[in-house]
Length: 431
Image (cartoon, rainbow, N blue to C red; front, side, top):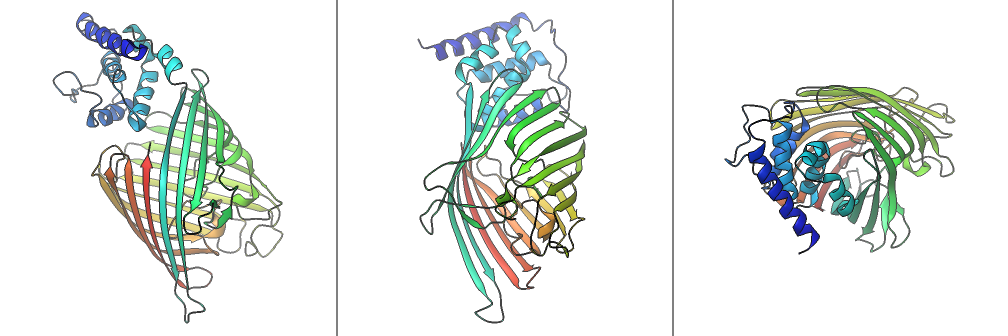
């Protein structure tokens, strides 16, 4: 009988025995009502990994104790899971390791022997068609992007506090049948033919609510104005539930990440506060970059070397299905195209683990290029000096771990005043 089967059977037997032996006197405290474990357990229950208390309920009228939570996690550990479910089970096992050990489940040893390195990723197909209106054929233009990407994200445990993480990307331009990539502004750039590019690699240490990152990793504002990794360090504090959080980071950005001179990298720092209170969340951060000769239209002084970008972002969840979010950013050192903002209304959203779930959104965006470190946006973007306009979109979980995303952007180029239309489609296969 192999070791995995022995471990599974042992765990099941131990938990079964423990549930009758200790049910009368429970030595463990309640899990707080706002603890993230409840959401994780709900997700695992929806996916059929966790079965609750035997009567198929989770006793929603009272808190679950740490002992009861450990029972469910131990049973989940005996099942074969993958992808998001496995990540949730592993996270719960780490959270309730002490209680699991008291049940006789040697979590640390099992994890160290079986899953020192965990792999997640996506295979992604993207189609994009970009159209510019003009007074004549010479001014008008069309461009298409037909791209295939595969991304691997390994995470290796060093000890109880530290992990080493990475992201490796490989792009193929299907229109030209070459290995190409795209810079922070959506421009096609050559990469080593047939090679995987190491986009991120860093060590992450967690001590309670504190996190330390060292290496090459993403910024905390990669969802708004800074979707590019940098090389440096970050210290952050974030409680599990409501409360204040903050992050401060410093390092260097590669020149091609911010579309400046190929010979110049940029010194980079950011700092800011955030908060979460029930259905409301927000953050205010400051980003500073320093490098010689930014964009030609950056400032009246073409030798401007600094960018000081202030960002405010936030959102509110009206209900489980309806939410609003937005941001405003301004570069106080720029003279042109220095402001950016977005307001988006969301309805539901596709859940990778649940086939048939879907979501939709509508947004208005105004993006001045100099208010960005690097843009994450797809259909209203920062080509030339930026664009403004409306975006509508939706996503749908066609199968488990397979999501289709569609977007349409109708806007205007801020510099040329030409109307632009952008069609965007993407399919993600998550693993």
